[in-house]
Length: 467
Ligand code: GLU
Image (tube, rainbow, N blue to C red; front, side, top):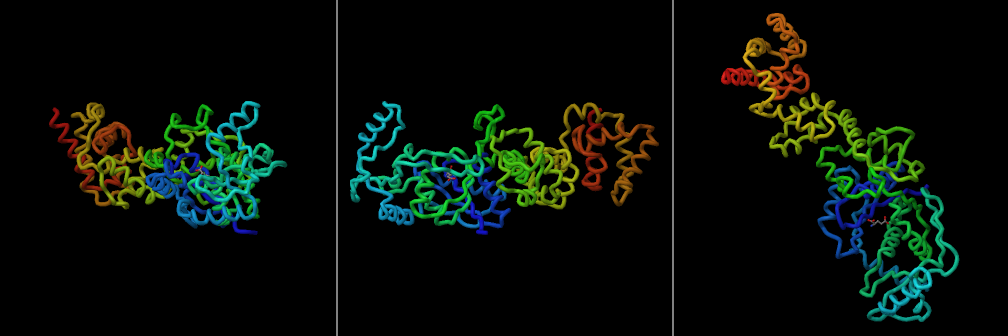
């Protein structure tokens, strides 16, 4: 079988949004599943709206998602010579012609067609004139007047367009630049693309593109048009449903693997399985399981998937992911081996990296900020006995193991005749500043002897100063 070659051709007119990222992902996963090739192409022919900033944002988002490409990035603006050669081929083979109809004349045609209830389209005035190049001439494709053009869509089934409804569309503007449909087809031909998965907002372009493929004698790629992503109210996904840019989700603390898991489920399924690792997706992704109905963006589902992915991500990796989030909170550290231990106490209780960073802050503070209510309730004179006992015992313990710590607490319980809960709360506030935290044995193990003792002594001082 031929190598599968897919592509992702974003127009750099903004950030990479959820819908675009899903298209990229489907094409990438299919190429990886089939051990084929995935090509990145930047469709920047709309010079007015294309920006370098958007190009960079797209690269950044793809990189974060771990969607890598085997060829490219190609830029359409660097390929005008190639398009010219193919336009000439179409002229030479009689599939295209020069047209000098003025704007006003075309407007008139449109109005006329609409007045009799027809589709506004070019009436073919210059079709058989045999005009040659001139200053204001555009080049039009000579579309067939009869018959039908069929998209054999692998997702939607056959979609039939009557050729009589199609226009002699422009393939080269009067300023010599190629139009969108022309550039796409020439790129797809010259890059050997044989599988095109894209949003169904492109369905109306496809018959024009099919006609161009045929006129150039090129085999048709496989087409599949995926339904748009909808917001929670089932209207088309837009900004009012939440963030649209992919990198905004990175900044909110989602893991790339969780995000691609979420994206893939907006239009693809594998039985009723919800959780997929990246490797599993590559292994299981085929086109047959792309759905016909629109995926609905559900933020809670994304959050739940993220929590599940956090649980299975190796702590070293989580530690690395956490670094920028901590930095944002003012804690600069690259100590992955320490953070790894920190993460192990937090990864089953954090839904996002933001939340995890919040939970990790006390591990990195030199001086603990006590939550006001926590301090009021637990850092009180009656806690001094427990805290001092614990300081003494910990100072004598060389290796902090769970067993060793447990024994210390048992001993203190016996001496003070207090239950573990009573002893634990002031210790927790002393060590973390809060009333809710990971288990205190875990915390003490991570902090180590000196920082633990220092925090307990700080708490003793805090209580003494108050009373
Ligand atoms: N550049 C188009 C877009 O960003 C994609 C065209 C295509 O997939 O053929 O929507």
